[in-house]
Amino acid sequence: MELDGTIALITGSTSGIGRATAELMAAAGARVIITGRDLERGKAAARAISGTGADARFIAADLTDPESLRGLAGDAGEVDILVNNAAFLPTGLTTVQDMKSFDIALATNIRAPYFLTAALVPAMIAKGRGSIVNIGTMGARIGMPGVSAYSATKSALEALTRTWAAEFGPAGVRVNAVAPGPTRTEMVLASIGEETADRMDAGGPLDRLAAPADIAEVIVFLASDRARHINGTTIAVDGGRTAVYRNQSGNQLSSRST
Ligand SMILES: NC(=O)c1ccc[n+]([C@@H]2O[C@H](COP(=O)([O-])OP(=O)(O)OC[C@H]3O[C@@H](n4cnc5c(N)ncnc54)[C@H](OP(=O)(O)O)[C@@H]3O)[C@@H](O)[C@H]2O)c1
Image 1 (cartoon, rainbow, N blue to C red):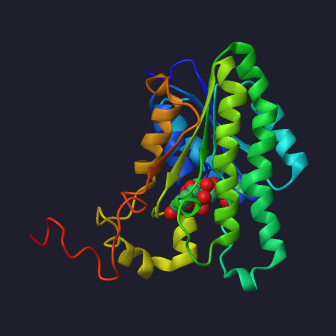
Image 2: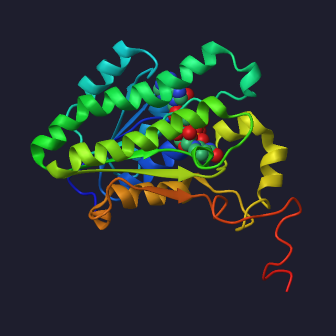
């Protein structure tokens, strides 16, 4: 299998896109390290993957806590694949954004991937191979009201993707990012609710909301040798939402209406 012999650490893999990524990577032969704060669902995710005959273990960590972050890097040991996926999404217009949530977003979405990468990449460099995939968002590409702090952190992560591609690429470590559009996960349902999510099903050029596995497939591809010549790029996995203009009532001239 294509990820045989590799160890993959996926942050935020107790649910959503992270968990789907861990499942696909395990199915492709990687030994996966699940991480998140929630002990119960972390253990359940590792158990479910181990139950398929794959190798999975759970390390509990709170990425906003520098001590916990150091513990995670130490317990994980050498990894071949790092997916910086965990994130915090504060919502609210800029004029009402509270500073506490802003700081949690900075700590979770930038500081944690930055220092986790700094801790784990030296072993990849020493081996002369490795792959890092950062998870961004379409909100880093287009202005979306109510997610200013979140989108800013994700733009920073895209910038880090390019800088790290320059810093680590010559040593054989590729760094790329995936920018998902709306995906049916806890994070989205908690912020917009089921009803809006259902409406969004028909809101994009593909007329469907992404499933976590739709995003995970691209993450696995970027982590694998199939993407061996891709470095420093961000792939939009948003069903075309950032590429296609739609007026308020949707595209009136589409192949559906002709
Ligand atoms: N869903 C979307 O529509 C969408 C769109 C664009 C981008 N994205 C991006 O995709 C990624 C995954 O999102 P998702 O929708 O799959 O989210 P999700 O289902 O809410 O999962 C978030 C994961 O992050 C972990 N996490 C959050 N804060 C943490 C912390 N302080 N320390 C450790 N772990 C933490 C959570 O684990 P615990 O709760 O166990 O700690 C959970 O496993 C994120 O980077 C998000 O920005 C999502």
